[in-house]
Amino acid sequence: MTKTNDFLEKETLVRLMRKYTVPCVISLLAAALSMLREIVFGTGLPLVLPLFFGLNGIVFFMPAADILTFIASAAVTVHTYRKLLR
Image 1: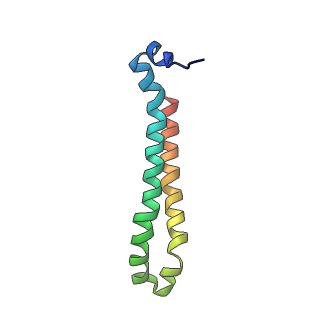
Image 2: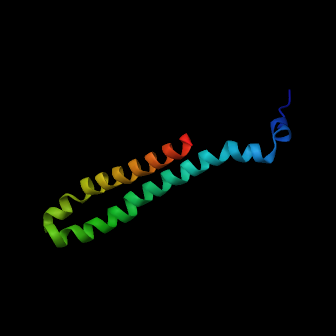
Image 3: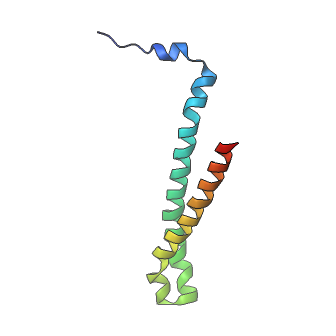
């Protein structure tokens, strides 16, 4: 028994793009948020927070990065949810 890719021949290009665009955009947003946390907050906060809080800035940079990432994720989630409701 051979398997064929008949579903690609029956679907129009526009329908395929609609079907696969949203998952691609969501995965790009997830990757961007992950890089935001690790690169921007993970390297920027340890450099900036000690200027204001001394050694305590080093201790609290990861919780601060988590809180800022949560705020960014919540903003993206609310924006996406509102856009999907239209």
